[in-house]
Length: 113
Image (cartoon, rainbow, N blue to C red; front, side, top):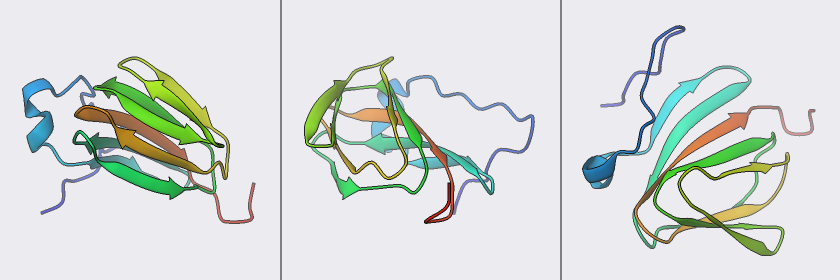
C-alpha cells in the first residue's frame, strides 16, 4: 500500500527517525509537474549507483552519514549538511551508517531547461 502524497497546506515532519529509521521506507512526500520532494532512507552499506537527473537537485542529510560521489570526487554528508547538484550532474550515494536524506528534485523534460 503506497502512502498518499501531501496535499497543499498539509504538514509533514522531516525530523530524524531515530529508532524508527530501520522500519521506515523511502517516501515521496509530494510530486508536482515540476517539483518532487522525498525522504530517502538508506541502511548502512546501501549503495545507489551513479545516475543523473535532468533537473537540479538538493540532498540534505537528516540523520546518519553518507558518501556522495560527484564528478569524480567524494563528499561526506553528516546531519545538517546539504549539497546542491546541477542539472545532469552524475552522482552516486553510499550510506556509511543508517541514514535518511531529504531530496528535492526540480523536474524538467530531458533536453529542456
